Image 1: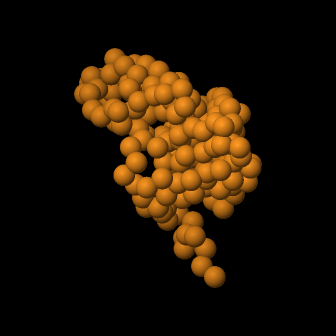
Image 2: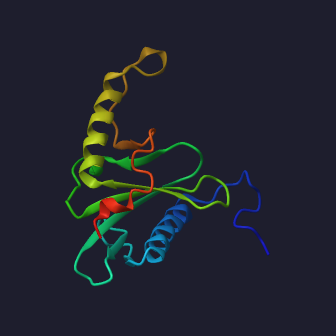
Image 3: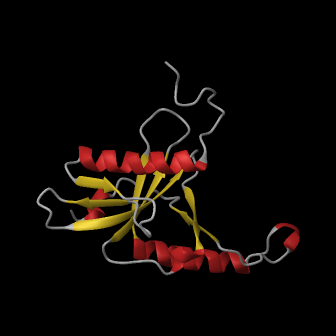
Length: 157
């Protein structure tokens, strides 16, 4: 049997990483007794739809996946304006090993606020060689304090 990575130093592609994150999230939600369905690739902004067992409440999830020990995920500029009370981000950390992933469950409004403030601060802070950063579409969400680690209850399912 071949392990999921032939060499521990070798990382899976970002596409496979993203897909695996979505399946991990759907699997974890199913394990917790919820109905989770991965959406088609052309579904705007929602990777997983999830509802409680009686289908009286549902939410959409945007899944972002990374590797390693860093609790930071890359987003794009659209993340500054994309929120709803029934939309959440699940940031998945695969940790570069075979242990269970970590899940950070964050309301989309929190992500919007964090991304806007973080990007504005980055633009104000000089970079290498004391040069001003140039605006670009890359944004970042971080949870260095693990405030949202395993916060599945925020989904209110």
